[in-house]
Length: 299
Image (cartoon, rainbow, N blue to C red):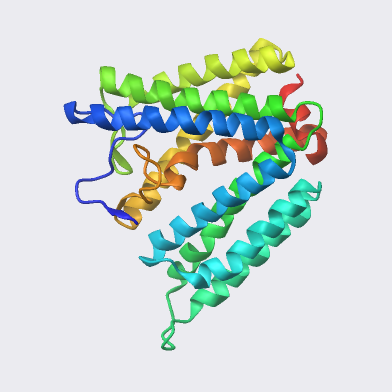
């Protein structure tokens, strides 16, 4: 399912686009019109519905990661990883984030041990083992962070709405600004088409959208909401660049073809997962894991 990278990474959130990109843009729009309401509805319902959705998303991320680093679905990664992700979702849902992290850590260790030795007894390099096991950390963030934020009974949904608004607006405005204005490249070594104009446009859109949603849903002080949205917008773009670097490392354009116009699930959640992790850390440091949403939004 991995699409080989024969011409460099394809258009991303803040990349300068060519004339042939219109069809891809329409596919991206259609996918977003389907996925965004599903994400918002699932976040609104919360509970086991959200936990199940996060588990499925994380499982797909791990599956794509195993194909990316091993060139085929690798059950030495998936066999210890999938039960670990399920356990992490259950524990996070039951307000035990520390145990959820421990479950992910055990799965990571299991994947590392399982991939250390090849079927014929040939040992893999330490870097290959680390890359294989790192997928559990990546997927573990996907499954735990949204559940921990949503578990706050007072502002869980508001926190996820703030996160969605910031990350999605960053992606949309970066894409549009990059298409419209082009300009100097942001980081050619990682992504040869992402531009500074797109990055700035994404930051502007993310800050405005995030601040508005935080103020409207939780009454967050506008300056604080803007600063938080700025931090999360930067984190989202950093997550996009991080995934681009991983794909370049393994010579892939997209992680799969599951989502029209976007590539794989990893391609869709790369910025969100980093922003979600930062949001949880900020909220937990202020008010604790059980009230991380309030810790994020109440200033």
